[in-house]
Image 1 (tube, rainbow, N blue to C red):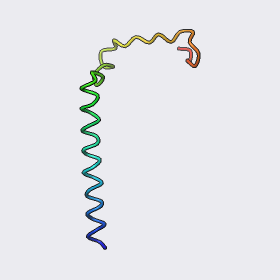
Image 2: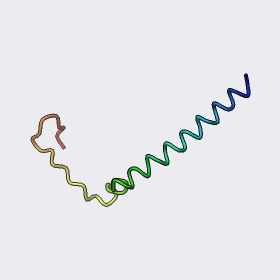
Image 3: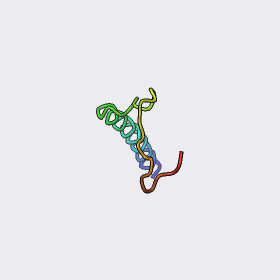
Image 4: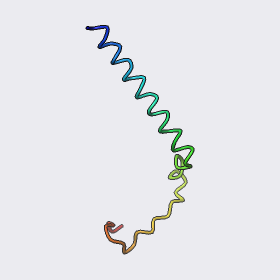
Amino acid sequence: MTVYQGTIAAAAVINEIIAVFMAKKGFEWAGELHQAEGGSIQHDTKGKAGTQPA
């Protein structure tokens, strides 16, 4: 039973590594990864429902 548990644990770790890598690539391909670093994002939320005051 220990061999199966170790195999399942190793597969889970490998799966998480692949998931993180693919998520990062997805954001890169969408052009959203470094968007917030330059401070160029403009938020137009003034007066809209559901927004919090700045």
